[in-house]
Image (cartoon, rainbow, N blue to C red; front, side, top):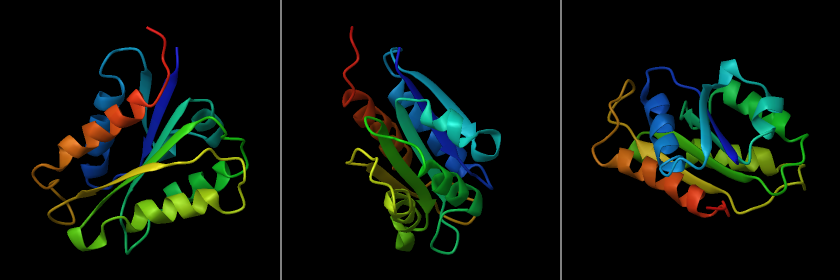
Length: 155
């Protein structure tokens, strides 16, 4: 059975909630075993062993958190061909895509062993501590479903 891992960093819980919603989308039919884990509780080796890799971070001053950046830097050394990779961030509306885009750029740097395209999502929060803006969580579940339907999983 194929597996997916969603790795996130979260200070106030919004990014964790988005990760859990993406997991619901990935595992909606029960045929994709999905693990959600905080970045401090995982290793690059654990992440690379999955068929689907989703990495998320809150946007802190226009960038992902240090812990998430460090994980992505370490993943650059692995052969990720054939893996489905997606990124997400939580942010203010004015910062859409900043952290997510930097994660993708960071993973692509000096790493020819990638299989594009990458999917991504920015989820808007109302304030530093949240909550997630109304209507945004549905986008998170949809990202999971989109990644899931792109896999050829036998019935």
